[in-house]
Length: 110
Image 1 (cartoon, rainbow, N blue to C red):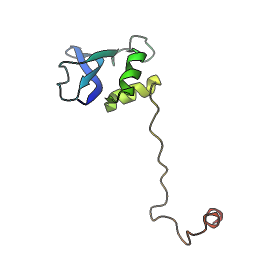
Image 2 (cartoon, rainbow, N blue to C red; image 1 turned 135 degrees about the vertical axis):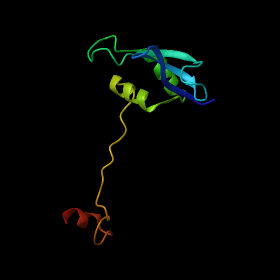
Image 3 (cartoon, rainbow, N blue to C red; image 1 turned 135 degrees about the horizontal axis):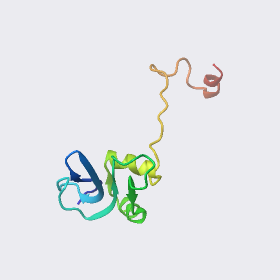
């Protein structure tokens, strides 16, 4: 069973409220879930304590057993400091290094 950490929508029309849940990847968005890990209110003010609430121990547990967060939840967890951001990729020259590549010190001085 593949477990995802994802958002389950609650609230009414034009007033969304989300729970952060651990659920089987094959169940529907608002269907059965394994455990509630927290909540997210996108309409609350940025600095408001009611915007995000997480049970840190449960989130760390589910991540340690292999649960994969969705892209949205990954961003929320990065902002909360529970997971590290992906490494930055440095783009080199489009056509690659030019000239002799056998001596790396010579390439640095060029």
